[in-house]
Length: 233
Ligand SMILES: C[S@@+](CC[C@H](N)C(=O)[O-])C[C@H]1O[C@@H](n2cnc3c(N)ncnc32)[C@H](O)[C@@H]1O
Image (cartoon, rainbow, N blue to C red; front, side, top):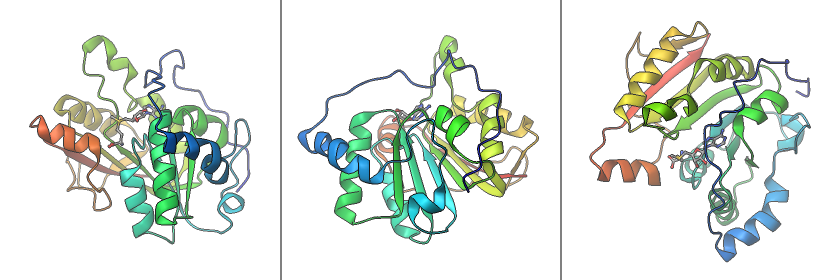
């Protein structure tokens, strides 16, 4: 699929869902970004992703947004070798760590972007080309004045709905009770997603979600984890 994505009203781009931290790269991560990223990278902007060409095969494409250190993505891609997996994040050390894991595990069904996922979705993902999307522990932006930065908002969900295939799955997880409630409200109000577990219901733990660093951190703070599972109508 190489059709140009539909022109989409972008979510308000003055406000991003992250603050760009460069972080300190280990030597291994530095090498991974230099040597491995070219091998695993999604196309550079503004080239539209041609998934079969990028992966060298036709298979359902699953996207993870905000991969952190890539623990979940490596687990999911290993368990589902017949799917093509795409992981996006803006944090170089996390992407470097993921690349090192892909090399160590010999996984070839993953492509990686050190990019803002909202820009990538808007400009480079063909309409209806994603079979699933996973967003685990998005930045909670817990202060009232920062909530406008939360990724899960109606304009982002409009854009994602264009890029997901009908019937595609959307999995969300958070350890912030307030964000969980917010997610339920915006998801239930959106006309293009249906809650698999019934209106307003949380889901059992996503079967594909291995524990990540952020989940463990939340548990140490005594936070409960909330999963949500929607289907694109
Ligand atoms: C709290 S961390 C969670 C990471 C991972 N999912 C986990 O559970 O360990 C949120 C991640 O989302 C990334 N992120 C936030 N907004 C993003 C965006 N617009 N595009 C890509 N990544 C983003 C951040 O850089 C960060 O790594």
